[in-house]
Length: 392
Image (cartoon, rainbow, N blue to C red):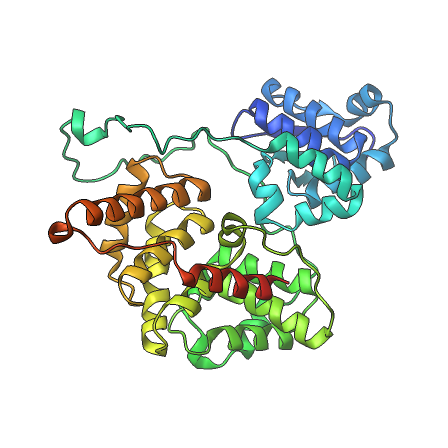
């Protein structure tokens, strides 16, 4: 980089207070102070809409050119910056918004990396800063109006405007480059397993990330994918993740030490829904495959946490004798739960208990018109024990 070179900046959206909180507490320990300062200065300079000399930035930060390049590359590696070279003297920097705290900690490997860098105690302190205590609304009446209750509107199509607008361009999801060659992975898969999901960019990045986390080569990842696909018509990244974990444990013969599940909420929050299918759907490969396909459709139509989904699935499967109904049925049940304030796993468990208590009361008061009572039954204790064994 020449000393007299200049740069332009572009960012598609403004940052919120939550974004800066994530940057300061989650990204900064990984970036270091120089990179963190550069990002903040870039953000302020973005509105200038003019070329800025690099030497002005170096003087402002009182750092050397090599320090700047090192810091800039950290921003690039963590997905907060894209760098383009126009000429030898002109650069374009595109700033990317940070992940949300939830995305950083749960949806990527960055949370694990941060914990390894700052230690478990410090990491747990940061977790407390980002925790949100949702109000309990299960005992309240949800009187919120829906759009179609107040407005009459019939649209023939959505807007199609050929222009760029403000919006979150987010960070790059493809942070991992030094992992498996994805094209080789797809090429080595059996032809019968080459579905359209392999063309999905998000699915691709999840596969690459799994290979990176477990340090699988192409052949190992093919084995994982093939094993996860057995007995299934369609496959989800959750199924592949579970199979990757099992494959790693089996081949490395390591004792995986995890916290034992202490309660129902912890169990349901940490177990993939595929385990629910294996446990509660009737022991028939066709029915299990159909259930997974139905769940896949349901997830695509609804924004729902895995733990809440697990509660919903168990509730329905126990009352449908292990047969999962059509996705429309799931949607109707979920719409009812959501309208009654169900958002978290705790909400779902409370609402489920309320339903079962009401059913029990009806049975006591009027047996001839009572619905079938669904107790908090023996299978729950058995289920908790099995989940504990799986997790530990």
